Length: 252
Image (cartoon, rainbow, N blue to C red):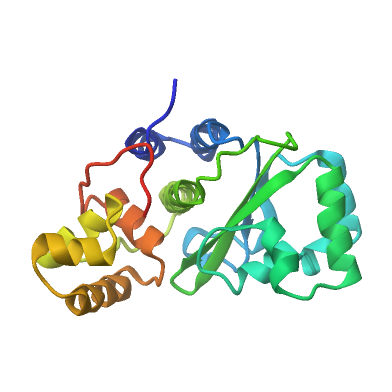
């Protein structure tokens, strides 16, 4: 039975442990053809007591990960280095098309594929003075993934939000709860964004200019401490700031 986006949000928010959250996430992305996942903290996450590290959570082949670390690939992995230049989810295949990579970086990519990691995608996760990322791959070579990159990005961003919340609960020190206030107009606009509407569509629906939409979106980004459209919407949903009518093919 397919898991809808709103159901994924609900189940993620109800998860009582990281293991439960991981199960929900993997069950959901599996519907789109991805059965392998790695979650990396690229910077220290002091607010939840975690240090930076590649593969904080993973179900990649153990032999491959052992060799990966033995060869020091985590220091030159082109997926990781390329993610620092990206704000949105990208396919691993685009890396060689857009940047010059070294022989060792190319070897890293090729050996990953030989280890059974096909159709790879990565979602950079930018937060306030912190950076993480989710990598997904398929054990099947062809026709395994449906290509719904935007939906995968939304899942990954909410996973990151829920992951931080679960770790915050385990912290002995008090963790600051975000005090984010959106105006009625910002709520209206961000709700439409979460429902898959473009800025041009939203401007037409609510009767303002595209310039006005851009102005409000910049204010939303500032309050959410992000430049990511997807992160802003998923964070707003998680905090109960907006209540969009979602469907399984949401494109944010």
